[in-house]
Amino acid sequence: MDLARRELLLLLGLAVATPSAMAQVSGFPARPMRIIVPFSAGALTDIIARIYAERLAALLGQPVQVENKPGAGGITASQYFLGQPADGHTMLFVSSAHAANPALRTKLPYDTKKDFAGLALIATSPSLVVVPADHPARTLEDLIRMGREKPGSLTYGSAGVGSATHLAGEYFRTEAGLQMVHVPFKGVQEAVSAVGGKQLDLAFPPIALARPLMDAGRVRALAVTSPKRAPGMPDMPTVAESGHAGFDSSIWYALVMHGKTPEPIMKTLAQQVSRVSDMRDVADKLRSQGLTQEKLMLSEFDEFIAADVAKLGRLVRASGITPE
Image 1 (cartoon, rainbow, N blue to C red):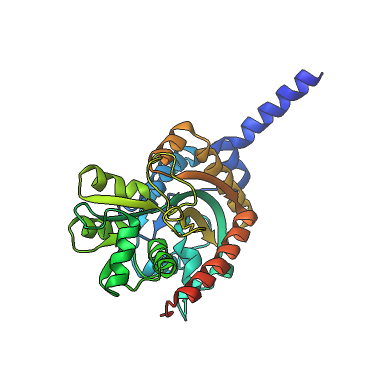
Image 2: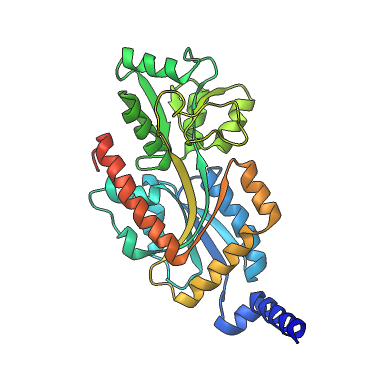
């Protein structure tokens, strides 16, 4: 009897998980879908979004197109996204910048907590502190000493004002007691390329975006921003080890929805995103990008975002960044 009951429950579970069963229950999705990405093609947000778009298309039975809308640290994409119907057919892929913008902008064209609904936290990544390959600073301590000797002489690039890589730079600048000049770009890959081209002194890219230029001998990493050494780079010291105890600056990547999206659609999408995250090849691809998989969904993710809005607000105020 117990065996028969377990088999029945298993069959019912499989039926609920199939795209055809979902379509019968909710009629969703009814047409092709989109994932809006706030940064340019080639950025890590774009890479992860395309991995999920391909797998979600197969699960949902509809094409899922990635659409890049770079600019203003993610605000351009967020504003565009909120102008789309709140029917679940459009998703927004965000990074930590999503939680930082309330502190960085005096007049956001939306309310981060009320206008968006968290769908799924997907992954986190530490950043690297990178400099041109032939930069005279051989260690992080060298770089800090150089910056202190000539205040304002160091330049660093980011994916734009309010981006996660901008906040990593400001966090580092504050902790190290430096004056640095910030140069914003539309995407962090452009900033790293500028470092590789010796137009900037440093940048704070995710590991995956730094690796190609490191392998090509164009940039050199001095430290990783996570509290512990990165699994794929065991010989790379942390910023904390270099004399700044407690330093921890990681970037997170996630999907959010319009705050008015119907709850059944939110649950359907969360279920399918979770299935994608459980795929072995997806896990391998994220790991190869230097990412750590995370799994916070719906209301739990909303709580995470609210806490990060408060945390990054404190960082912005402490760093002395003047909101625009």
